[in-house]
Length: 518
Ligand SMILES: *Cc1c(COP(=O)(O)O)cnc(C)c1O
Image (cartoon, rainbow, N blue to C red):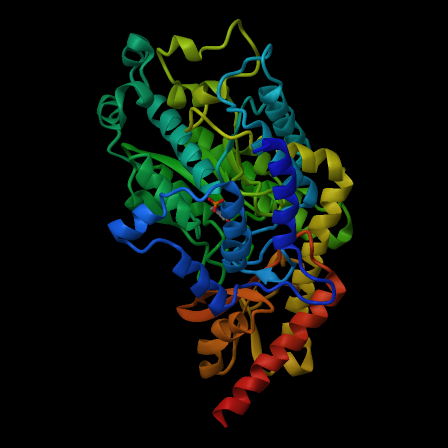
């Protein structure tokens, strides 16, 4: 077989399998029959069927199987702009193209080898461009690509743990063998430092924060919710933070939710909050980690009045010690791409140094570290390339315009639910307006949270929307009751058409339900 000819043809066939015929809509979910067909083509859990699948059918037949049987059973968030589940993003065409190039060359970006590949320099360029785009300032010497925000949160807590425990170690321990947590382990380091507990202080921290706390040995119990009040649980209570920081023999990592995944709201309300947090962290030896998976992109919105409130909410985040950013969400690059920034690369080295493998060491001193010494993986994908491609292709203005479209659609939907005659009788926008807040709607970023007023419709709402196949939302809970989230995150969003579609669909869902229970 001619490998090049096969691949050229296969890319075209793959695109054809994902394309949406003109004049039709992109299904958000596969049909039940497509799922059943694909499932029945997989080997059952038996020796006979598994061996049969290992007979080897060849590349041509495999490609046909993938494009004709597997592809129709995949969900459609990269095929249209009306998949509003979770916060997914889709993939900009240039990003998808770059990702194909990544596979075509299949470089493993683990050691900085400037005479052999430009890959590590592209990674570093992409990270520097992203720092500029997000206006985070200079001095983020610790920076790397990860597999997503969860991995970046693991890096954040690992770096925080290293720093807050390390700072309390007696000098003689630190000097002897240069030991911090990375060398001594969390138990020995905490014992030597007189630390009883490392706690993670947050407000509506993403679920992955608890996972990260487990992975780095702090434990899920270490994550403490410090909500400002019942009406704004996403906001961090800075007084409570100070009280927690004062506890003896307990070291703390402050995890700022920027933004919160149900509401898109920010734990801090601007630069002044971050200055206060920074002061507290410095005084008590705490670490500030920002989980900005999608929220941090508020900083890249156009600098106009329309987005001033959001940009203000995300202001000051550059005062943190570490930051999580997701690429595969609002930046619209393919999975799996996350980014992690921290002040010093030495903190990353302390945790992730891959020691004693001479064959993996880079020659000479370079300002670009080998990725294997600053992150979880050794062998790793060149996932920086799609990010680099998006940044140079769209530029600052193009990214801002893409993000603005997402926010405008989310705000349009929120406004329709709150004030459209046909909608406001049936649905309730959440969270309930904060008393005294004048800027209705200006806090809406890319997530719209709402519920149906009727209990029965509310119970069925998410299922009925998903069942239409035309659009997709996720369910969640708010105040202990079911609620529905619309997260706008695709470059494909068309503000006017999609707003019209969502409004019409919400009216229809309510009408159909009323007809069905009458
Ligand atoms: C999505 C998300 C995560 C988890 O990100 P993955 O990329 O799915 O690992 C973490 N934090 C926040 C705020 C998120 O929105």
